[in-house]
Amino acid sequence: MTAGTGWPVHGDTGGAWERRSARQASAVRVSAAVYPSHLDAAVARGLRTGSEIGASGGLVRVGPLKLFTDGSLNTRTALCRDPYPGLERTDGSHGIEQTAPHELVRLMRRAAAHGIEPAVHAIGDRADTVALDAFEAVRCRGRIEHAQLLGPEDLPRFAELGVTAGVQPRHATDDRDVADRYWAGRTGRAFAYADLLAAGARLEFGSDAPVSPLDPWLAIASAVARTDDDRPAGHPEQRLPVRDALAAAARGRRLIRVGDPADLVVVDVDPLTADPDTLRAMPVHATMTAGRWTHGPY
Image 1: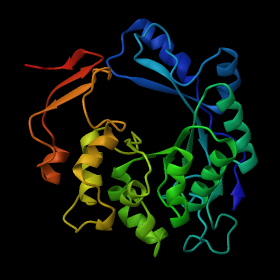
Image 2 (image 1 turned 120 degrees about the vertical axis):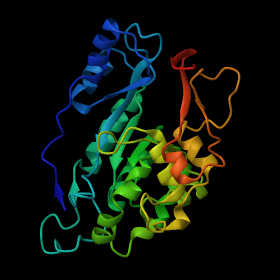
Image 3 (image 1 turned 90 degrees about the horizontal axis):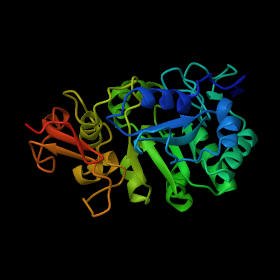
Image 4 (image 1 turned 30 degrees about the vertical axis):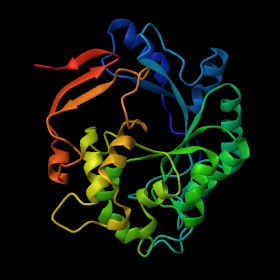
């Protein structure tokens, strides 16, 4: 296990979106992440997660502090408890530690003290444990992004700590073969969406675009079917019912209620009765954002 030499370099996303929204009104809701290199500036400006950025009519807001504990599965840099096949005698046999645990806690504590919620990238099972330990130490709200490989003892901790699992179901199908190769014997607890849901975790779907396509219906179909080709489902016990997949794609919303943001998608097929192929190609009749039609209706 090796420690990273520094943070990935990212720009001032909040400033970029502020300039962009000044030139043109946004047609979508944007949550602009804060990166560690800009945390002090965000604190000095009094920015908080959920604060409006610029004159966007509330569509562009400050997002979380984005932190990284490890790398990725495909590069064999996701931080795992067990060594990767073929790397057993190397320094990187278990992946990389992008941020030391004490530094992760320090950054999360500073951000949370100023109203900025953390979103922690964690893919390997060791990385997810480190991230959950940090949330337990800081006792703040936030998210773990990806949560691809989990130890059984960590499943209930998401609900216990109030940590959202931000997952990307296309990875469960796109990375199926590489997971079988690098996480052999452990894939029963990889992309464990049904187990997370059963343990009371809040699931929210994303795409990780451009790593996977932005289309949310592809994520929904992958969560429901656990396959995107002619092969049987990979670990079908981790499939989600359509209702739960739809809720995860809608940030937990299951009903249209008075007082909710008027963000709607009108589809031409009932997703509750659609097969996976229809879900993937879901015909969208119209979309509405903040009460304004952004596509259709015609």
